[in-house]
Length: 291
Image 1 (cartoon, rainbow, N blue to C red):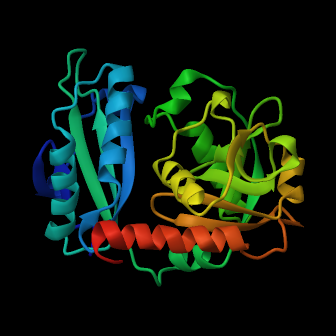
Image 2 (image 1 turned 30 degrees about the horizontal axis):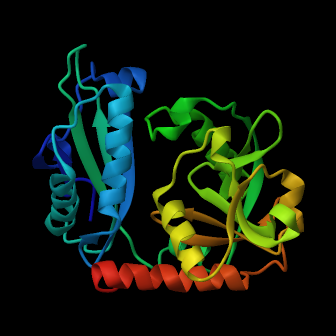
């Protein structure tokens, strides 16, 4: 599918890419006043669409943006975009801006990219990836809990990672606590409260984006009998961990096997990671009828 023939969504209409444009006075373009969600289509069905819409809705309320659609329409838009592009397996980015002028109304648009499990991105995710510790130090503030268009620190971390030949750049707080990746949430297997084995994730009080996939992973982990704790994790804890992984809605669960030049755990996907990958695939199959 070429960009010239791709169909895109703009304010409820499906248009050829060449006709789907945003005015130069759009407040999302000029001020970053907007939100986005990225989600996967499996067999033409949007996975975790309700959870993505719920986060979008919370963010819109925080920014004072009135969404011109509800949860059912959101799902319909995303799935129709897949059909119109002949792409039942795809990643969809859905964006809402505050529109033009101080009174709006909100502007919505969505673009789709077919997802092939054999493409380089998918192959890179399969057996373990390397990350770097980004130079970015990001202080906590409440708006990091909103998936807004203000993504500059994450983009800098991502570019640093790609220049280093790594899959992901991990951001830290000014105090040196691990936060998240430029486009992922982080989990590691280590010692929790009282020295008990646990699946650890960074403390959200540090200012983390509430990941949709991360929330599902927490639920799946508990069903598998894994203890899940939130903690203030320092970089040294990564190298004491028995295993680690990254999550997002496109890549799903990605084993993290190296950070910089150092190995994490055994340097290969661990048993908890593999068990969660299998549980995630089962959740997709139940919700979408397979991949």
